Image 1 (tube, helix red, strand yellow):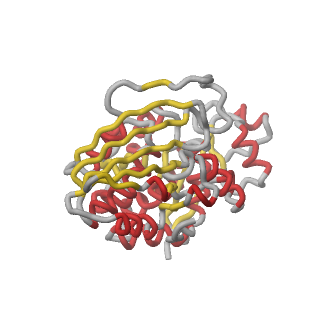
Image 2 (cartoon, one colour):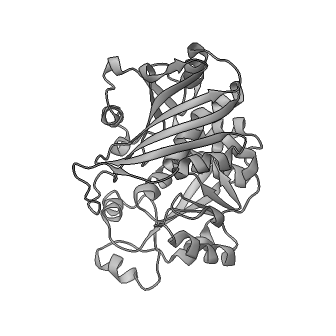
Length: 344
């Protein structure tokens, strides 16, 4: 079986996780990653024995890497010669510039949330609109929050239909280890409707969505409260069954020790997951409550890692490795070890 050759542009928070996630897929291989400086991630890559070849993202920057003892296999242009597709995890705005090279080289590409939606031929989510990605050349992925919100919403919509979604996002202000954002003892309110609600309507245009967002001085995941108006009457038992059956959702009980967003981070660390990553979003079982025929619940978003499965779904769609969503996400889930786990 011919494997899809995948290159990763940008070996940072998302890029290194993309590389490791793709490397687990039996029908794909990582042919290289790029960066332009000897960052901590790149230095760790060298100390681990260079499991992925490193290419310089910007011609002329090779010396900085070589002087730090980092082996360099070429430039981003050279990586494009070896890859069938590039997963671009560059800083926001850089991916759009890189696209010019991808078009020139005839290599497909998937772009992350930091880029404008217009950079892709389709705005993609593995569970919500997989078929729209079939055969496409350039794809834009949803953000970590939109990715997480769409997992249960798409499942509810398929089961009983969704008329309206209202969400309140309690957004972490930075990733663990970041020092460039200095929020301390403050909650910063965003004006207007958050982009995640707009993105949900872009992916599922028949659903009305709105929401607000507040930035909090924390790092271990976003918390989102989701209020759902179903088209058909449902029950708490049916909703809970849908959530627990989803391979990319972990339902946990506060009573079992999952009192906070950091509880999921600690649990992933205790499981031995690299960097305490978790591909699944979390749902607090006790927060699932009904008011009349509507219901609401709270989810935890592991912002550094939850988009990895949907990126891999995107590769499957673009190369038509699987023609249907169910086949594709099942394959991705199998290689990543994702499966329904009941209530934790």
